[in-house]
Image (cartoon, rainbow, N blue to C red; front, side):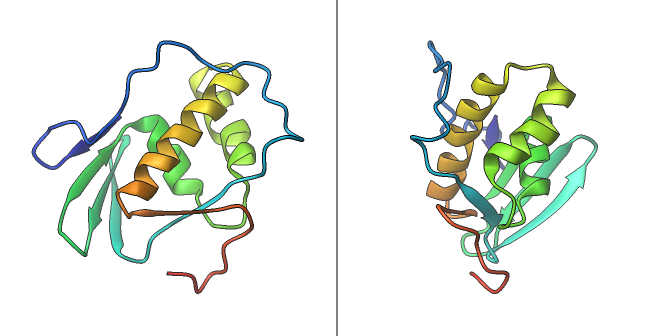
Length: 125
């Protein structure tokens, strides 16, 4: 879950159904990297992220924080989920990946995360 600095929901949607059996060959890999327009710090088990463009503050829960922390632009999202989320949060891999796709899409829409179909160069903004 993501929250704005005022505690209001930053657009997290409730999911009533989940996609199972993701066909890896039909979906392109996703690569993620925090935008340079952010400042982030871990506080207990939550990541606090601030957009330097508009000073909005986001609080990422433990699962989202694990994904954010591993977002290096070079590691595919599927690998991040498999190594950082599934073993630590006891969740089905397909469900975790689908949730992660929705999370990164939401963070990208907020302008704090870069998402690409190919590795993201270190100098990317």
